[in-house]
Image 1 (tube, one colour):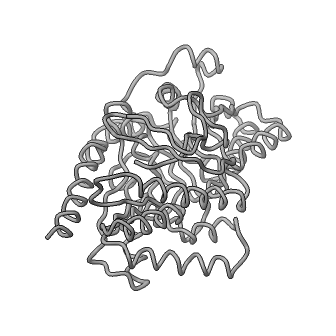
Image 2 (image 1 turned 180 degrees about the horizontal axis):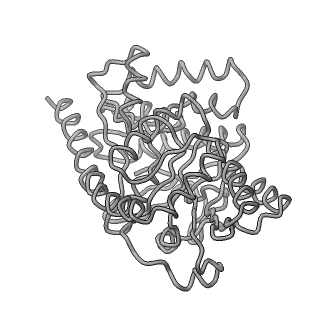
Length: 376
């Protein structure tokens, strides 16, 4: 694996690493080559583009130096990593696979992060070029497949391997008593969001809901928890302070090993994205982690992911960016303990369909077929 040093989302290199030209480590039996990149926080479009482009250059150079390679995989959402994979494949004369995790630059248009139409059009032409030149495309949603097919990409070379959950880590457990005491959550019905606080997530909707609940009779029984970082984090914290919200807690990103402790605090998990046609095609990976933990979801994302919530009966959907609907569904969750318990059970049962080990084996099978077809 060729990658940079861990620094997301604050743009600060994690302890134990340095941003050097080349360094290697072994993780779970996998050789990991880390290269230098221009590091910046997950905010500011121009700086992030420089970050992405720097990896394309350093990653391609490093990949050339890695010997005995049969196939190269480049993963989105941004396009510079697949660019590096494509260049590597040409120089090594091996197949290249595009792993499609988000539609880029369409997602940039959706959140309004860039207004330069000519640049976006150029990126779209690059996107289609990379799709056409990939040996196969592995998408995380069926909707992405339909999108590509409608734009002239051969559907025969597109396969789906969804996101999933590590069921050995994300499994039901009682609330962490120490964190309950520390955060003052004893006796509270906790609704939480865990993940990136970005432009696409429109988390001001949760602030609106918290404000409505704070001013509502019986609303003091509910508490909101937001864990993570991102481009909108500072603004959200500032807005909550200005509104005088006493029923919401912000927690910075915690170590991977600690995340499950915080998941355990949630009675319900809020999953939310902006109201946009683009997001009809995405499936937030945290949905599967909620299933594994047996945490009912309040799902504010329309489209394919909402269909999973309804089909598996693991929670309720609400209209994206509609704080009133979120409040009503949250109150319903607490007022209907039998349905709530059913959502829990259904989540744990459904998680087995999305076990990451099984999905990884499916991905491996696709890569082996691709490599073998090249050898033939």
